[in-house]
Image (cartoon, rainbow, N blue to C red; front, side, top):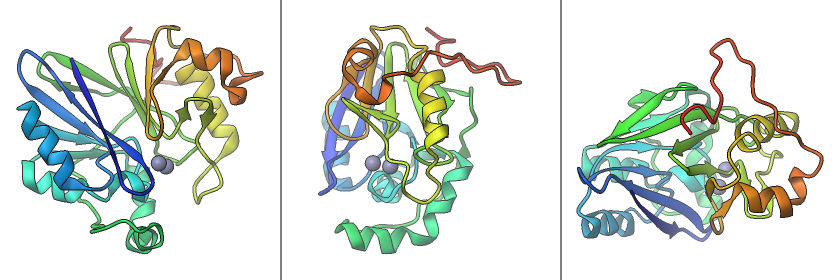
Length: 225
Ligand SMILES: [Zn+2]
Ligand SMILES: [Zn+2]
């Protein structure tokens, strides 16, 4: 599997391009800004992108979605609870100095436990509310695209509209701490890390315990490991 990171905008948001090496089919995660740079990288990788999947819809993660979607003819996947950010998207973009913000049209609603296929690869969707109500992490084998749930040495803020600190703690306990230690975490900002490193050094995980979630659907983040 190919994983390419393109860090965009003054907010240094990580957009990821993930490709299946055999079929050359790929997915773009969180195209936050600078669509031309993202499209150039897609072209140089010679990938066919059918899907854009977002972890959440904060302005720094969605500004380039519509432009990339139109250029590639891809479908956009987002959890329905994230539409709450759209009414203030232009205003927030202007505030952070982001260019060309357009509210993207959602083609497919993400559902907890769904699996999205690209080539022979499988991407599992796990709902992780807290940073935002509809935040999801995206799991492809031992690589987790974790948006703003967790960063190297930190966790997502919960003081924005829709943020919920007890909810992010529950998401970290059920969706991150239950993953195998060697799992690689690719956050929405900053460098990639692993579950083992964060368990040892991330001060926000101190005192938290791995708690598999007992939901009616019964999905655990580690189901496909
Ligand atoms: Zn965010
Ligand atoms: Zn962010």
